[in-house]
Length: 307
Image (cartoon, rainbow, N blue to C red):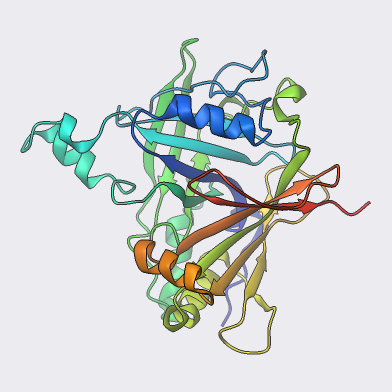
């Protein structure tokens, strides 16, 4: 299978990870991530100046709002919440239809999606992935790039292109390509925006969990999307596999995408209730912290940096 991606059209550059919380829960989410040590977070347009996670903006469709936590490796966490529950919108109205049809509407709170860094549309990453899929017969299909954006409170207009899988959203990444500069979308200036009291420097890994019967097919589909074959961590087809990802900025570290079959009772229940998707995010930590934590909707692993 010839699926290597070219440097000018990479489909394995990690951009951000999406975490969903219940509608209207930004204040609670702020307190939870602050307690986890993400105190120098920022919202989507102004720096944090008082060690708090700050509420962010509302997307162009008016259905969701977000908070960003930027990391020193240039990746970020998007803490997302719907502005209202479905019941807020009268049944049968266009607004209710839009809310119900939103790709994240059926998702449970927690880690729900993974975004790769796209481009400004040339070459089309969707077309590239679809061509690979046709050759590989992996069954993957991505929608063509669609425009999205947001106007910041300071008046600056952000524009991007989104391409997403037609199926398996959350197990297969979507792509966000900037039409306007990425620096407008990811506020890494000042550098203190990415300095966290918990010592987090960046993302070590994102772990996907799937039922054993789905691992082989999902491995093939992810290989098509990412443009590279994984390396196998264990000896069997159902063992964990790993792909090395790229970053938008140079940090000297390589984040990994891991795919595992559910093994424990807790993992089986997780997959039964949510389907295949992100089970945990591992963060590189400077300062010796290790172990596990919860957002409380998503699992976190603290991965100490080698000294």
